[in-house]
Image 1: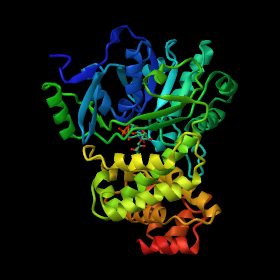
Image 2: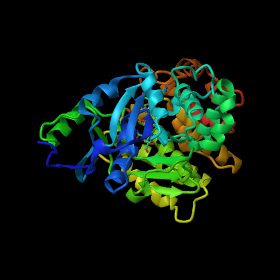
Image 3: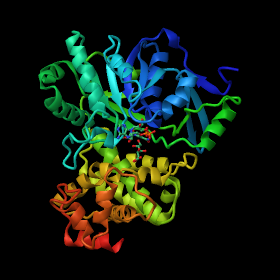
Image 4: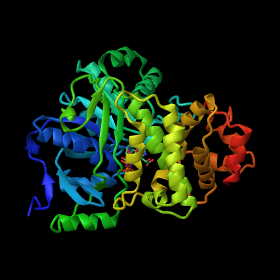
Length: 445
Ligand code: NAI
Ligand code: CS2
C-alpha cells in the first residue's frame, strides 16, 4: 500500500507544481539536503519549486529515479532509531550528455528561477591556483550548459537566474560567480554585463552527513516501506544545517520556514564548518585508514585518533575563526564529536579520502597558514598530512582524485613535503612548511 504506514510523506499535489529549480549533480547529498528542505517548504504552503535534477556524467541516478517518477526516501539514522520520509519534489532527472537539449530547455524555462549545484569540488574545473582551467571547462562541464542557457535567456528577453553552489568550497558563491565570469570572458564576453546585472550567486554553508547508499541500506529501507523497493534511497543523520546568503535574483522557496538560516554573511559559519567539521573529517579519514579503521565512528572511537580530532577542531581550527555573536565553537566541537560517533551511519573513511587535492586547501591549508602567522603549531593537521601522503602513495588502494597521477609521483619523493606544499609546489598555498613541520610529517610516513 502507498504510502507505507511507517513513513512520513509530502502533502502537496506534486503534479500541479511548476518546476522552479534545476539542480546539477543530483547525488545523495542533494536528495537528503536541499531537496528535503524544498519538499518540506512546499508542504508548509510554498509552491511551484519542483526540481529537475541533472546528471552531468552518469545515467545511474536517472535509472534509479525515473522508473519511480522521481519519488524517493530520506532515512535518518541514529542510535535512537530510524525515520523515513518520502520526498515528492524531484519530478525529472536528465542525463546531460544524452539529452543536452532538454537540459538547455530546463535552464531557459520561464518558470526556472534557481539553478543549484552539488557537483563535487572537482566539478568546478579549477586549476591549482583556483582559476578556471579552460582545458577542464569544456563541453562536458557545467559551464557549457550554463553558458548556452544564460545566452538563450538573454536573447529571449527572459530574466536572469540565481546560481547557488552547495558544494564544500570556501566562499562558494563568490567562487562560482568568479569562475562563471572567467568562463564567459573566454566564451561569450558580450554576456558578462547581463550576467552581472541579472544573476546572483549566493554563498551557502551546507551541512548534513550523507554517506553513499549501499545495497544493504536499500534492503533495510524496503522493510520500512512494507516491501516497496526504493533504488534512490538516501541515508543520513537527524542533524541538518543550511545557512544561506539571502541574495536571490528571482525569489526562493520559504526554506527559512523549515529550518534554514537566511543571513547576510555566511562566512563565519562556512569557515567553522570547513575547518572544524571537514578538517577533522579528512584527518579522521587518512589517519583512521592508516590505523586499519573502515568507518568514521570507528576512527573517532579510537582514543588516540579522537584526541587528534579534538585538538584539530578545538585548538588548531577554532583558533583561526572569529566567531559571530551566538556562535559557540566549543559547543560546535562537542556536537561534531557526537555526530561523528553516530554508530548507525556507517560513513566510510575511504569516501571522505576521495579527492583530497580538491578538499585540503579549504580544510587544512588555510588553517595552517593562519596558525603560522600566530606562531601556533598544528600537530593534528600535520598527522593528517602524513596520512594523506601515505594515501597518495597507494597505502589504501587506488587513489580516487583527479590529480592522483601527478600528486602520487610527488608523494614518492624524499622531499615530498616541500614538493607538495612549499612555494611553487603542487599544492602551494600561503602556508610554508617549516623544518619542524617537515620533520613532523616525515615522522608519520
Ligand atoms: P555523490 O557521489 O552522490 O554525487 C556527486 C554528484 O556530482 C553526482 O551527480 C556526480 O555525477 C557529480 N559529479 C562528480 N564528479 C563531477 C564532475 N567532475 N563534474 C560534474 N559533476 C560531477 O556525492 P554527494 O554525497 O551527493 O556529494 C556531492 C557533494 O556535495 C560533495 O562533494 C560536497 O561538495 C557536497 N556535500 C556533501 C555532503 C555529504 O555528506 N555527502 C555534505 C555536504 C556537502
Ligand atoms: C565529507 C563531507 O566527503 C567528505 O569529504 O567531509 O561530505 C561531509 O560529510 C559533509 O560536508 C558534512 O556536511
